[in-house]
Amino acid sequence: GGGQWRPQQSPLGLRVADAPSAYAALYAQPRADDDAAPASMPVPGQSGLPATSADSGVPPLGYAIAQLHGIYILAENAEGLIVVDMHAAHERIGYERLKTAHDGIGLHAQPLLVPITLAVGERDADTAEREADTLVALGFEITRSGPGSLHVRSIPALLANAEPEGLLRDVLTDLREHGQSRRIASARDELLSTMACHGAVRANRRLTVPEMNALLRDMEITERSGQCNHGRPTWARFSLAEIDRWFLRGR
Image (tube, rainbow, N blue to C red):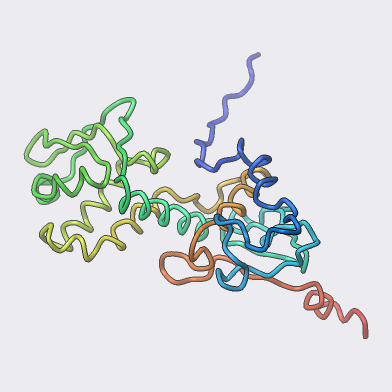
């Protein structure tokens, strides 16, 4: 008989295919006359990344060795063990990308393959109509299709892998709570944080080793990647000496 059908996971948007060449570019040994760190690489210590010896050839957050309970990435660096909360880390990466795009060229819209009609209730439909310019600036293309329904044609390209219905409902809730458009600017960070959460990898999502390494490399080039958007740490480190003490080694 035919093989059993299994649901496929949608891609995360991590740049796995580019990883080998990116690793080589980021972590090539510096030339003798090259005093400065690469412009795209935060300096360990200043960025919150663990320091690593220059001659180890190992990136600050190391290389992934396993995933724990679908929540944490375990990685080995030159000093010991790194444990990463993958959702919190991916959320920070997404937030910084959204913020950079929003403040620069703006958030590009990604047309949906099949536009959707969403029943949101009259209050949220009113909000969408009133905040139409704000939604366009955030990368949404939406028209009102009824007293309590919306027709969604596009979502932000950076969140193309997000579930559009939940994303839009949460954005409309934020817009409604923050009131008129003139108040949205001051609430921008919270709004982009909500959007980033929808684009982040969820708990119990199984990642391949290349995906885990791509996430670690993205963390290393992302500002403030040591904290998620809510202020929680995204990673912790345990030195080999600390792990040795767990097992009373060397006594």
